[in-house]
Amino acid sequence: MPEKLRILIADDEPLARQRIEDLLPSSVELAGTAATGDEAIEKIAELKPDLVFLDVQMPGKSGLQVVEAIGEAMPATIFVTAFDQFALKAFDVAAVDYLVKPFDDERFAQALQRARKSIELREVEKMTRRLLGFLQEEPKQKFLDRIAVESRGQVRLVPVSRIDYITASGPYAELHVADKTYAVRERMQTLEEQLDPEVFFRVHRSAIVRLDRIDALLHRPGGDYAVRLKDGTELDVSRARRDELQQRLGIKG
Image (cartoon, rainbow, N blue to C red; front, side, top):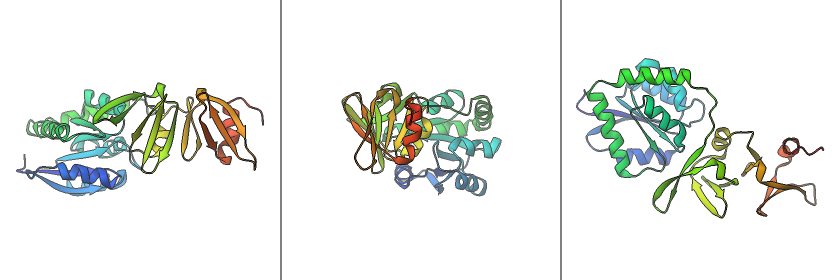
């Protein structure tokens, strides 16, 4: 094993990349960073790092597609994800470790130590083969059943089945669960792709709604529409989504 582990950080969020970089000890070397899946593939081939911190959700190619593209030459991998469902299962099967955002310093140090041990014991190639096998066997379409959120200094898992609706709030999305609101640092587009479309519908660029929570479709003056939820919340419906929403609700135009 080299004196210093050479590390690549692949994440589309600059703050997330910086967070990992800040936590790296002086005993390792930052070989480079990547902001997309395609860039991660190029950098892994070019820099040949010993360890990759790999975000599961990235534009273009996902972290999983990066692993499939590199194949058996994939270095030791620590998955980084805002969602726990895949990471937990992949770790059980073959990943060196996983970090669910937001993670604390101690959890990061633990993951790095586990990766170092795997590299020292030359277990990476065997684990990569198992991971590739897992990716080939798993159905490609997977929907979330839990989302990790930070609340009062603790990471908790919010069951998707309890979410009433989701709204955009700057760089965050807010999960609305009964009378509670939880912030997650994730794009609405990514959340929409990870949620079962039979259950959730994006009524507006800034809102995703659980369909069975909708009580009424409202026609406002000026031709605008909104939905009223069973708890009384009203959310705008974009004109581009109105027709499809009416179909999903069984309302004839």
